[in-house]
Picture 1: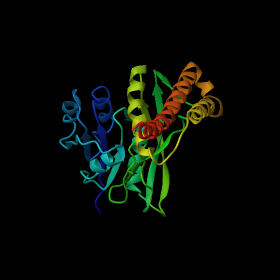
Picture 2: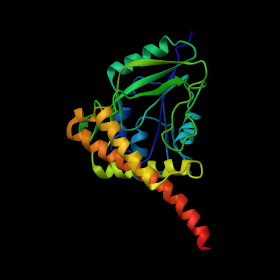
Picture 3: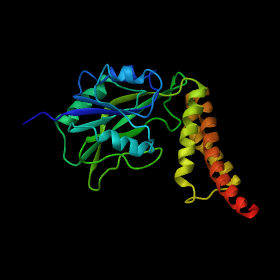
Picture 4: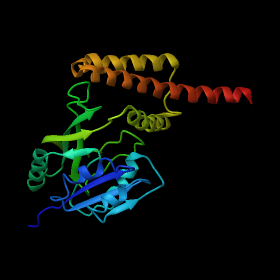
Length: 261
């Protein structure tokens, strides 16, 4: 019986800072690395080609979910492990992945537990840990959904979700401008996805932001992450407020534009 094959898949853009360190944790034990780029203007492609010849480009951005679907269409291996460029597979997680594939139970997808470092500090609370995400599955059995942002793997009906041991290390923002740049893209996609389908108000935006802070800092024990926990709760509350305020303003402008015409 042939040994099942494993691919690592990534979607990237301007990831020269992280990509090499990510691929160095997987390149010597997986069968295939598939990378789909959306228009990098740095050294992302040259770094990627040191590890794989399966480097593709799609400049017509369809949203995160459909971009991942396109990337998966280039995968030929039996299983696919999804990573982001700012993630690292630990030795314990590697062993758990290999064991899961070797002893695969039919109709099973696998989730990993991410440990995030933000602004130079590992975050163990604040709703960021534990952080279980489905990342490993048989290539022909499922894929990511169509979401523009905050996409997730579709778990087919009747499938089980098994937990892998070991942590997936996630090195997110180091500088505040990295946070604002990334969340700006997410906020716009979030509002685009809900415009015309979901209503908001200025008061609603304020309340959503307040309760986001309360949830992260108090209920999810963000205070135990020290000053970083406070900072993350404030930033997240502001992001939440801005998303709902954007949704409200879009509807407001549309209505009043009609009145003025």
